[in-house]
Length: 294
Image (tube, rainbow, N blue to C red):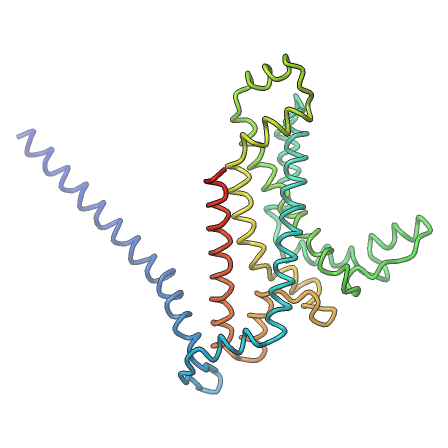
């Protein structure tokens, strides 16, 4: 009797697992695979839903994108933005994580303070920094004028506008980097640091020779996740500079949005999206391979 009951329980459990897994597969197919396949298929069509145009054009959308100077400028800006933002985010994340790790009390408080921007809306952050960068009465130019210096056209100068947005992006993400890196540092056996200290290694030497190599996996995860984010940057570009001055802060995602919702070239936007997808995929694979080899 007891054996029969156990068999019924096991059968019921298997049925629940099968139904749950089937539901997950269906949901994943509907909300992940279908949009990807549909997006890829539309990249081979001249598609304008507002004029009921849907005509097969082969790879014309891809050749149009690759021959367009704005595509290459947007790609260059995206790579420049990604590298600059990664350096700022990882660099300051490491610095603040090391400082907080060395503090004996109040680490939770400092973690909370630094993490606040991460949970803030990127739209609100962008609007705040746009106000601070304002040429006439922004915070930074007010400080410069108070020091007797000239005002800086933060968002109007082609050389400064994109780095200014990098600072905004890094400011928002440093808390995320800090938490990830600090978790890696806290997982290191304290006896390793004690042995190095006994051998005469200073704090800087311990940080370079012990901490960084032992948190390599945390840094790799941070770099890959942020690389994917930064290659798709859109919100701060849209709300701070609108791609300007001219097209000097135009990134790939902003270019895709403009193609789709300003010029209604949805097929071309799909093609550029898949080129961006391929670039991000290749960079992520290279990063993982590099990490594995080291």
